Length: 458
Ligand code: IMP
Image 1: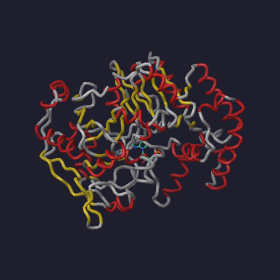
Image 2: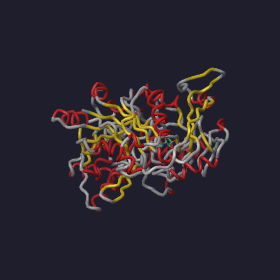
Image 3: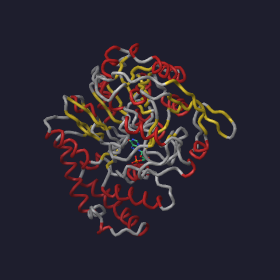
Image 4: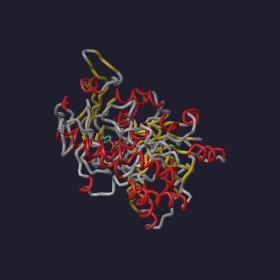
């Protein structure tokens, strides 16, 4: 049995909490895309852990797998593992031999490219973790894979081919003085070889590398439950998101098959749960038709989007929801729930269930709005258009719901769905009916016991 967890919006929908909740019944939790651009906070036995790469299930004694669709920064991986070990845990994390390695030059190039784009206001607002440049090298057939770190000759050969190209790009195209970098060895073949060969030795010594598809298939054959944990969200999917304001991988459900090495039938034969935040947030650039409040902090606004309308409300929701990036600390842009976006996400991933989070954050507002449809060039649309330029021209037609009063999250979660305020239930039922998908879980607070569980997918 498999359960796939997919972000249905722009990331930060509260996937971690749901992975945590349903992951209790999983034996293996596998990430299928992304790298240390994701951020999740896990509270376990009263201790708080902040992770960006290690699957959160690994803290709770599950086997964590970083699938072949992930990009792995070994520095981050070992920092996180060492910290967990220092705090008394013994996480079991396996890494796909086919996963690509984020090397120090990828981070440098991510930074320079964003800087260059920012001169014309075209920056993506990346997390600066080298994600895009690493996937670029994967597609360009010049990447270094985890399996390559285990073989000294292959590793040297790969680095000798690619590093001079990267150095030339940095120096000749971008005019960078690489000796002046914070990490002066980022473009040095010998130094990279030494560091990453050592990583390979550690992977070997700790028996961490696997053929992910074979490993997961073996686990399922032994009757184990597997959870596929997506990072980021549908609208920053490289194919189905708002290109170019996207991450460089596929957070949608198809990515779970490609990014782990099991068949699409395995993923589609299980449950696919779309995680929905009761409103919207976005870090980084790009349109947001239901945006409230416009530009915040250093977050670049999208040129054609104009200022949002309600700064105070955006500020209120941002503070109530703690809407600041886990990885970067950046304030998130805020908007109302966007149904055309969710209809698109539901079609792409085939959600069998939903988890609707953060209803507590909206409690106490007089009214709550949703973008029900869009108008584009005089036509009403139920789903998102395919190009970002068209999306930026969409005007949301808002529907207004009566707000709901504040409630006690833990007591409501304990008492169950019927204990939710009537107006909050009307909101949930609207979403279920529009997406023709039942809400399996409703998040009413950040704590572990603060989710109303209506269905357990495993
Ligand atoms: P990258 O993944 O660092 O290349 O960033 C590309 C885009 O995806 C930027 O707009 C980021 O802000 C966004 N992004 C990446 N990871 C996350 C995440 O975990 N949550 C929300 N947005 C993200």
